[in-house]
Image (cartoon, rainbow, N blue to C red; front, side, top):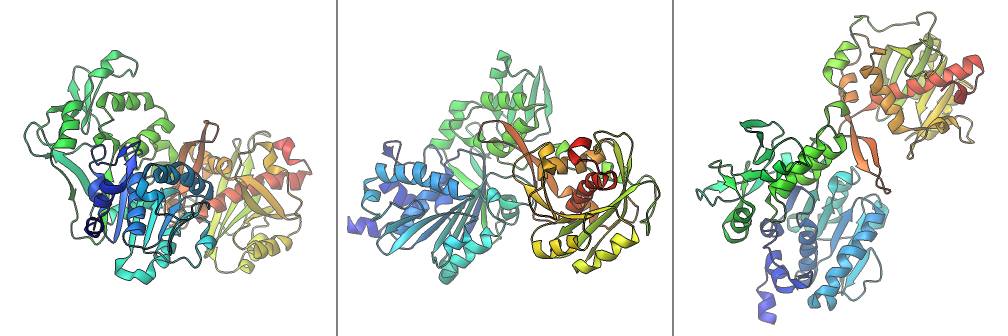
Length: 545
């Protein structure tokens, strides 16, 4: 047994010898792509669909590192509750099923620290960086990178820095936005796609999805390697949908696919083999448990439903997806500059003037004039004319803008410089507030102020909707010479749909790793507009919303 253990050098060897899953010895038959990913070295990433076996793969890496290499491992999930759930639903069952693991860990009572002699498996949430202080590991595994803290990769490298070139960093995630999270990592990697031998021509083939359909006649449309039959997900015709090979464009039955995956040759083929980091792409189409008919039905059900379309693309196909209506197009932005005016140095008459201020490395501001068209539903029945926009280095540089434009009201981002923001608001009593974003969608309760004299809390998603609706409903005007970053900042936020804990569809705005300060400054000027009406008329905010 000792000689046998001494011969184990790879994760895949360890898994086939010691792991059990669902009461049976672990094999790669169900997930043939997992073997090559298991044995990757150094730094690697995997952009993937859901349910393709990579959580169990990551566990195998952790177990082998602790059992054979006698080194500690850090396993990171997006949040602390997710880390606790992982401990209960993934780690604990793996221990119970595998005799080798039952004797490996000496203390598993803690949800986030599983001790094995002098080493351990640490299971942490990405936003609990304080809990990782002092931890030194050789291996860091990040699960669902796109939902983790933006600084998590940097933290992971710090925790394994003492192992230098021997450290391993594995990143796994379903994707969200292009250039963000796992997609940013994958695009800078070798970009390897899983391929297998075609049963018809014996050449390498793969299964992928293309959102642009190719009409084939008789009601059949090909989307990449999936041929969809009909247009009605409830019509039996959808059951005639099938996979098509990439090499010889021949139909591929489910049994042929399974046989090719499990009994034929398979490999990852790199688009950029010279890159330092290996990057793998795996979707559900290659899974032996997923057939073309179910994929076709999900696609037809998703037509016209942005939530279902996003779920299909992110979780089944493993690709980034943005609904056309979920981000601001250049055409709509350009249309808002149709009046052809330049940035103002003073205020037009018969308007309410507000200033919105967003805090980052620089302080971004938007000065806007609002004209009310109807005295109800103010955001929908008013016109916003941006007078000026820019950035400054110090809070004190905002003060002159209030006087220059004779602004009625100003709203300032509360974070991260809460003290400085509150001091700025305090210099204009009754005409300025600092703004916090709430995590819960609210209606009129947006304007039920906290006890703090200069603060207000608003719903982030709802008010961002208000910003973008101005472009959709043509109620915003922009100067021709507004800052060149204005459009990129607006475009960098994308509306993403998801299910909440009750199973209801909700939405939130997410951003790529880019700035969005002018978007929030414009939002704060919208908030200030509504507050300015209460200030100038003495009316309660709830009465005029």
